[in-house]
Length: 103
Image 1 (spheres, rainbow, N blue to C red):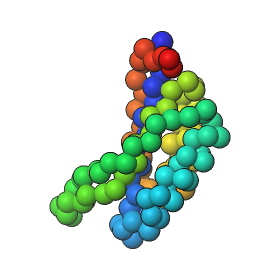
Image 2 (cartoon, rainbow, N blue to C red; image 1 turned 90 degrees about the horizontal axis):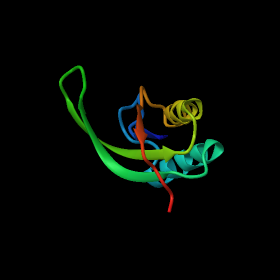
Image 3 (spheres, one colour; image 1 turned 135 degrees about the vertical axis):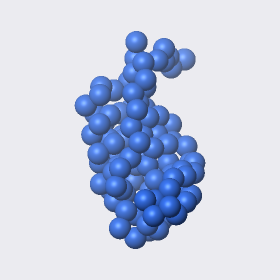
Image 4 (tube, helix red, strand yellow; image 1 turned 120 degrees about the vertical axis):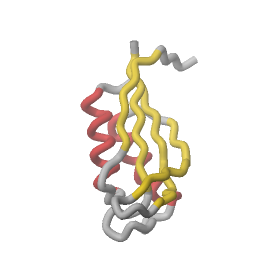
């Protein structure tokens, strides 16, 4: 079965803890990275929520990327490049075996 990869990147800069790159620009950056390794993906704007170590709750604009039809190495490259391009401490990365078809 084909694998489905999910990358979720928050848009708050890891150093300032605020969003520096606007959402439209971040989406374009992510799309450009994905298209180096895949023929396409689904990008969804969403919100992340988490607690900092100091207990502060943060709501963060995020972009979820769902990618199929590539190998794990290229999916990991996408995740790493998105992390660096958006200056993130980490990005969410998951792999799921799925019965994907493009009809």
